[in-house]
Amino acid sequence: MSSAPLEGIKVIALEQAVSAPYASRQLADLGAEVIKIERPEGDFARYYDTYVSGTSSFFVWVNRSKSSLVLDLKDPADREQLEALLGEADVFIVNLAPAAAQRLGLSAGQVGERYPRIVACEITGYGAGGPRSDDKAYDLAIQAEAGAMSVTGDADASKVGFSAADIAAGSFAFSGILAALVRRGRTGEGAVVSVSMLDALAEWISAPLLAAHYGPGQPPRSGRRHAAIAPYGTFDLSDDTIIMIAIQNDREFAAFANDVLLDRSIATDQHFATAAARIANVDVLERTINAIFAVVDAKEIRRRLNEAKIAIADVNTLAQVWEHEQLRARNRFVSVEGFDGPVEVLKFPVEFQGFEPNYGPIPKLGEHTS
Image (cartoon, rainbow, N blue to C red; front, side):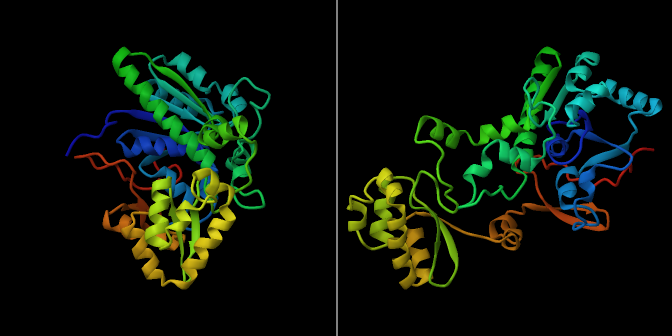
């Protein structure tokens, strides 16, 4: 077995909720020692629900393999202990409200000044320097502010059904920390890294943002469809199952018309012959497809799609994802120790040849304080 990529790296994480814990959990997966600093009442994400081994699904997801240390940062002795830990640390992560972190002297900039070799990373809602810098920011609020809700759903505004803003910010924090550690290994200098949830999610919606600004403006919500490509969305089959098909170009559409719909004329019809024409006439196109799908055996449609090499996917429920044949065949779940026994969680999504990521237990509140 190869050594862990982040073996020997110590991370102090003054974190709560999802964004920073998601970043530090990935560091823990890769072998870093992550010490999670919690207030006496604990990270409030512990109490979102009690579905998994007596604690919340959110907490289990983003906090495996960490140590939990309870500190009252207003207590001089506890604060002294934190400073001693920071003096030995390679990475510091914080996602307290910016004003609160500043008052405590624990913003990334303040910690970076005291410990020049440390990689100090802060995750905020809106970033420093603007009129919204001190506003409270939670995932759903940032989804609204960043425009994600304006391009999600059908007629009504809809949120993305998972913590998109938190995940975006945590992912950029993770990659920023890794880049800073690489530079420190080369030059010896630490870094102050800042990520805002608004910046991160706005980056994720850059394609529709650019298209709206330089093109026709705000697109209608496309829901189950792609906003710019057709046919690309969900379709009902004759056995009442729902599939998603995705066709990227005119060549694929010609194969779809000829080998799946068995009507070559559809591909040459002026209403469907180009990508722009298919989008302009998407309602008519989908009615044409649905009329054929409704009267042909579902297994036959699936066979034709596969033989024509058209991308096809099942629209799965969460229960079906849990038992997904590809995830299970590739052993993408692993057992970790929860509060009331072992629980299954998904593995770190990056596979390293010769290295198995760290999958430690879920820490109880203050379990490692002593």
